[in-house]
Length: 299
Image (cartoon, rainbow, N blue to C red; front, side, top):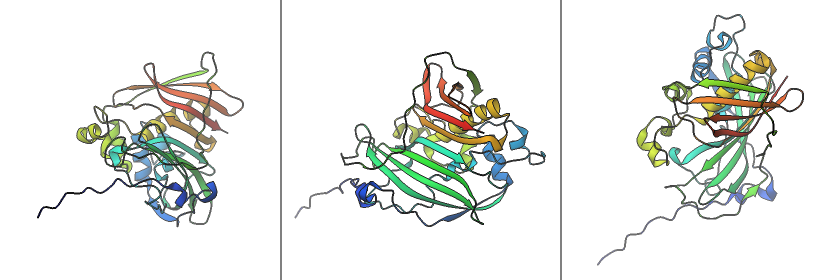
């Protein structure tokens, strides 16, 4: 007697299970996250920062770089995988990020982080775009950060194997139109050959950024820089140029990752004033846009 081999079907997306009436899903229970000055310093070095306020704990103005908490996006989330199936690291990439600083993070201690699902929509052929909202509070209830995280799931087992599905939820994604004139600011940052290896020590251990085999499984010829590292590089360039690096003046940074960045590249940020305390910007490597539909609001 012979038995036919069967394979398990790929799980399907069904975000309406969570996003009822197009409204955000429920907040997950807040989770505690602890950090110390060493974590603060390591993050600043990981994004190539050289401002002593962020890389020297003995500086009189020592501060947490405002985008330090970006790595907590979607933490504290309880996600129904019947609604949004799990995707392995090489097939899951950062697509969009927004961080709003409402109060500076303390130099060390424990914060409470909670998240909820905002929206899930098909994106292109065999991919899905999911968005999450996150809040970071101090233990005494002060709201420090509000974030939106957008992930592009490009498959569940292999690239492009996500079946068509009906999207649900109200997306926070935004498009911006850059002015048709020369930029008001042009900034540059060389990216070290080991930048991804440094940045991953802040806790983003996706093998896509260090292992050539994992990178190839994800459709890249070589390990790429973390999108959040590129995000931090943009943040420090803009904060330095527009706010003299003052962490108190950081407002909101919104960015879409439009193409990969490689260690060893040179990042060019071009920005246009869009009213008081706001610029629109784009980051490029050569003639290729790597961050688009981006803005920075500052005080």
